[in-house]
Amino acid sequence: MVYKNYSFGTVMSMYPDMSKVIPTEKQLREKGRFGNAVRYAKRILADPEKKAAYQLKLKKGGSVYHAAIAEYMKMERNIDQTPA
Image 1 (tube, rainbow, N blue to C red):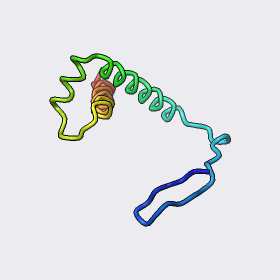
Image 2: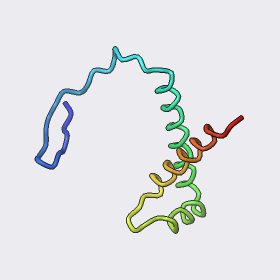
Image 3: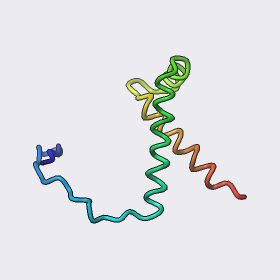
């Protein structure tokens, strides 16, 4: 069972069965890219100097982890779009 929280309350539903879903090549590529972004963010969190540098750039209450993932994804997207 999965519990989902909405503005009107909590809804309980069955966990989705994804066993018959075949991801496309692009979906697999994006999944890999996101995995790389997570590893990048974890390296930032593990380095006190880099983590402090990110915290200076964030708004109050911002997450270093999420900011690092977003930065990696944008950086990666820009690399993919440069003409060869």
